[in-house]
Image (tube, rainbow, N blue to C red; front, side, top):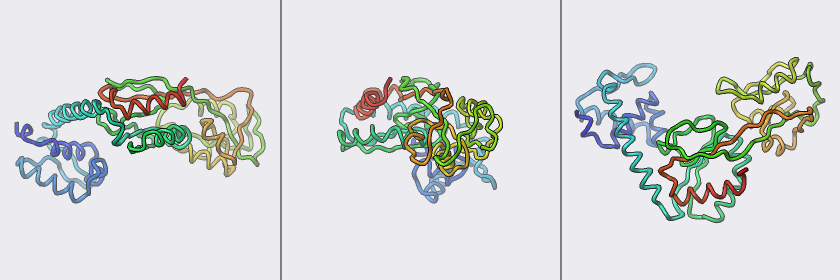
Amino acid sequence: MWVSAMEWGDVRIFLAIARNGTLGAAARALRLSHPTMGRRLLALEAATGQVLFQRTAEGFVLTEEGSAILPLAEQMEEGALTMERRLAGQGQRLEGTLRVSSADWFGAYVLPPVIAEYAREYPHVEIEVLTGTRLFNLAQREADLAFRIVPFDAPDIVQRRLLHMQYGAYVARSSADPVVGDGEGHRLVVMDTSTGKFPDIAWLKDRFPGAGAVVKSNNRNVQAQMCAMGVGIAVLPRPVGDQNPEIRRLDLGEDPPQREVWMGYHRDLRRLQRLRAFVDLTVRHLGV
């Protein structure tokens, strides 16, 4: 089939557009310009003699021809990425780029001491910290190392339980203490639970049934700032809440449920020295 003559660069363009649905989003994913993506796609379709995408008002949709080659393109991608990971995993020099992904609060309040020491010890390694709710794909080298509050379920991931993260309930320093079992007169600042299950949020609502949610956010830093402004009670990871001078932790007789933090990387990178050095330093700082 004509897909066998496509270069890996063509396949990357094709897959990025298929997965993201627009040229702009695909360009950002590959760190290319929007016009470049458009030119590359037109050149690819001209070279293959096939229309791979239907252009719609909502974005780019695979045509029948495009859908037919998608599995083959994904196979080609897996082969190229496997080669890339294994070559990278042989790297013995402590230089280059290391991409680390985590939740926003973990990157802002937990990792900085680790990164600061790592930067001092290995000044020739550039560290990229990627934060947010998106789970970066380790097999596709979107990140080299990831920290999550759930175990990794993808194959070929080397993972370990790093620590048990403690949580606390917080209010603004000027706010009165809420009554456990009631909460009347107070509001709650909570996580947007549409992104997953959060035992700490269920715990908070159970302790203060008379307090309804006033703000929902998928960002713990936003929740902490809303709490500091006196908007409501928030459950936060202790590193976030304890480092904010505008809020105070409530003594409710028991603490919210803890969460486990997991660290993982693809097994093909297990010999990558800059990764090994970061993992070892992280375990010394944070490991249980």
